[in-house]
Length: 340
Ligand code: PEP
Ligand code: MN
Image (cartoon, rainbow, N blue to C red; front, top):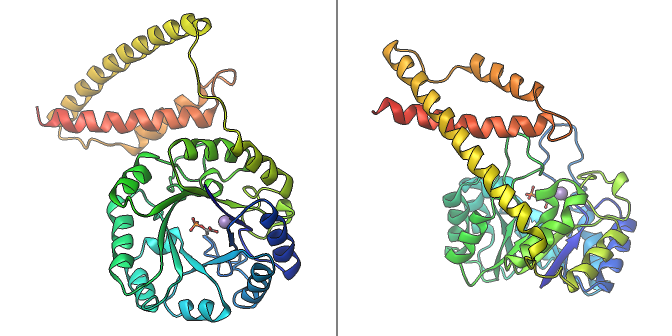
């Protein structure tokens, strides 16, 4: 299992040097640090640029780590290669844009840098596959690897980016010769979730992990909520060596399992009844030539769900996620019944 780790952004020589020195002791192979940071909003820290390449290279040589940075332009291939960088990653926002990817491929001609391709922001299988194919078909001479960093969603979910594991697993099947890494930091958005995501990724046979580590995450200039401090990363690595025991079902859970199965049946019956009502509504809409979707109605129902959530069981955010899911089914059922 390969470990790629380092701060979200290179912030100072001390931070880079201290982190690289620590990571080497834990068996990390690739030292990652962002120098050009794609930030969602204006006015945020956008990285230290080429100045930081010197810090990264000096530290990586000193501690014999392979260095990797994110690039978003073809011309940056030469800049980073001249400084001795060993790998680049194409970030989620760049993978999304075929023009930028083509330009990067031109820059990669003849290069032996390792290229790590993150998934695009949206769960668009063809777009990610297309970027991989573009790099494979280019004159790039080095290795190619993939990184699963989750997918952006509007509706709040527990994670910053939803993992949608089926998609990276299908991509792994599509390109069995390429290593697939998991970036739990950008999936989680919160450091508490990182150990669970790492275990899950390894159980799903990912080839390794890319984890953000910072000497003092609360002072980090980017992604401070999701970076691990040194002792948290050390704990993570030692727990990965002794994975949790495979879950074994025993008799003590039989009763709970039976109750769960009955509850699930009740839920399915109720959703079935709801589906019938939804179809009635859509027939009415069809007869009166009304549009299927009413945003007013959607907002009204959403607030009913949020308000009737019960803090002891689930909160308003969870109620909203459930309602959005159910509502997306309702729309499908209404569309189907128009065809009846
Ligand atoms: C990063 O790795 O720091 C980064 C910006 O990643 P992503 O492209 O996955 O958002
Ligand atoms: Mn980051």
